[in-house]
Image (tube, rainbow, N blue to C red; front, side):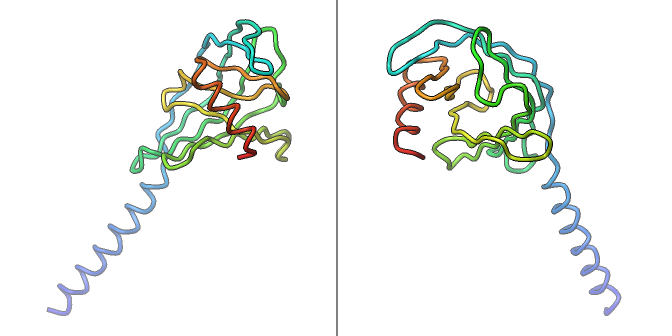
Amino acid sequence: MKNTVKAALVLLIVLIAGLSIFSKLMYEKEIDRSIPVTIYRDGEAEGKSVVHFFGKLMTDRLSKERQVFEGDIVMNGYKIEGEGVSVRWSQEEKQRADRAVFVQQGRTQKGFNAIIDKDMTSFAMRISPGRYAATSEELYEAMAKLNWEGN
């Protein structure tokens, strides 16, 4: 009887440890995507451009709500603040916006808010003070409001 209880306890501990390790693993998907956007400056549509995403999109295996993107963002005809360095952001279902952080040589260089969907096809982000890139006017307005409120 003692051996059975001991074996069950060991099995339970091994299962818990295995689930814990498995939950830390992320599903990775390579991203190489170009998305047309409208550029807004001080509330007015200024022009059109294309944003290119290159990198890895990682999704939690157990909690599909959490995603992390690591890679580069390049925009035709415009310089994004921090462009030319790596960008990393994570999404949480409960957050109002995502936090993106540009990193250069292991140091945090610049942070900004972005609104982006799980498929990385609809988004809005600040590219410089007063200037935003967005796939829709609604996302631009939401992004401008977030930055105005300082969130």
